[in-house]
Image 1 (cartoon, rainbow, N blue to C red):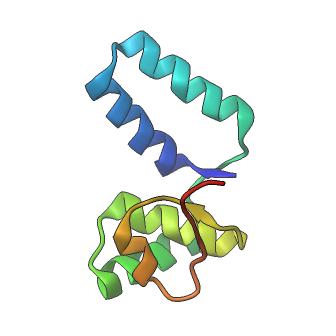
Image 2: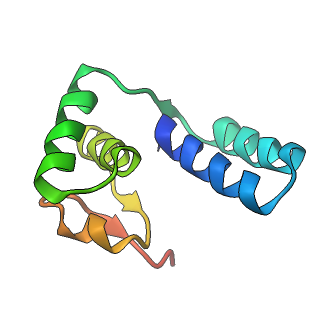
Length: 94
């Protein structure tokens, strides 16, 4: 599973590093390989609570809220995710 905001974050980073066609190709690959979870009411409200409590950016709070709602680990090396209670982090990938 992958949050729709993860697609946003990765696409934005790839646009900075690569050309638009390559960024789209990478985003399309992720969309084809993972179930995309869109923001719903529960994710939105949990995200707002996480953002307020842990002082993290919007996209990151949505990504964390999605992982919590879906009960799946989050794959990331961002240190601020480690502060969030009950969020399981997988990094490095083995």
